[in-house]
Image (cartoon, rainbow, N blue to C red):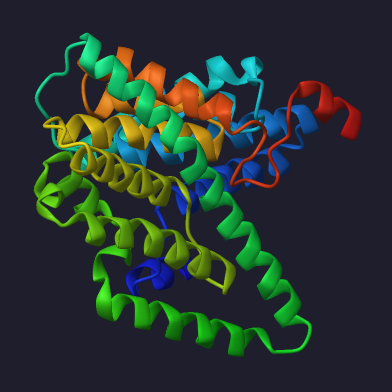
Length: 316
């Protein structure tokens, strides 16, 4: 309900966060009822996360890879592969039978792995790194500021002030509020490519601000879709600044690069593009996503992400 209210009233967040919590929470409830071990609880929690993501994006392979990658920044949870695969595929068929198989992205023209496309992929991967870092720093910075305010001001007042900030942003840039699905579809259909360069830069900056305010001033939602939004706008800025004709391709490649850089989910980013856009984008996407992923080091939007399994064992 908190997520429905947040997103329904214009908060800048994604549905994938609540879907991960719901899927994982249901799995956790079942495992506690069955009295399973801590290891099994973790495994089924990740399976629940995979089902939520697979159902919301209609992308079962992406859901599987998310379950493997999301616990760590530089490692994968290989033991969860088989159960996550079963859970994710099952969730996909149930979701597709109920809501259809349409994804959030329209299918653009195929992209050949020619030299110009690969050059743009490298450039977008490099540009995605500082943008992803700025996104993470903004979210963390607003979180720290709200933490200081919460010691002196009631949380209800903080939430109201956050709503006022979002309302002020929405008066001038309504595109940055809410889920952003329609805007992302327009990016991949090149409709937003008709906007001025100044307007696109403003959308990128205010999307980061709106998301930081939404999720730190009491809102509930995910960061996956906002990262896609920021990446898509970055790709359009790049295409307009350099007069590149491949508007849609630049938007898609930048989405994958920012997603991999900010979420530390390299394989997930590549699989999402492959499943929802098409296989012709895979090679350039691998380049842009990998560059963004490695240039940002250990920085991530998720504070609970560990560096590797070794760090997890040490914490235990």
